[in-house]
Length: 204
Image (cartoon, rainbow, N blue to C red; front, side):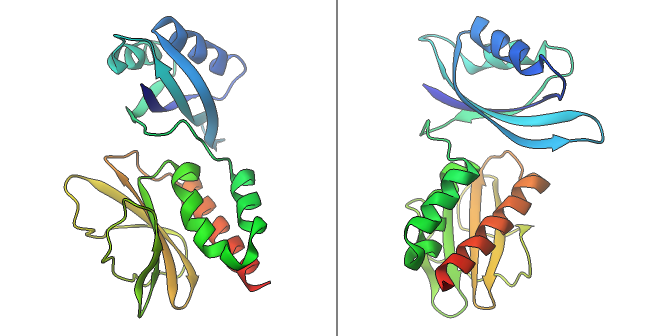
């Protein structure tokens, strides 16, 4: 069963190898790793690890194995429906493949790029104009000037975290994660950059 693990670890040589060894010894099989954020002020990094587990292995055992490593903290783990991690460069390639559909393609690649449950493009007047399958149909337009974390009520149960970015004066993109992890500053910035790029491509 696939899981997504978000972990903070020392940004020093050998840390990732020790993490991979601990996950393997606990019964996890790493499918992909992506660096989400490097924190130069304290020499740590935040990585997303896509992994699968052997039959009968509980995620708690993998979390315990990771947390037992010096300087390693598991920030979040959850079942994940897809093993497809989309890197930013791959997302850009998708946006440029069909410039006329760049804004719609942006919405479609955001869940894999940011490991979110859904994404939606919302128009000030027309409401949701394009969204992935899990997005609510009646999301309201939000007035934002840049990419930010959002506090909105999307009508879903439980704790859902949101972030959004401005496309232009009449459109925004919103993404959501149910239950976490929280959106890091680097992720919010990346969302803003990709959204701006998609808008520029769509106008060419």
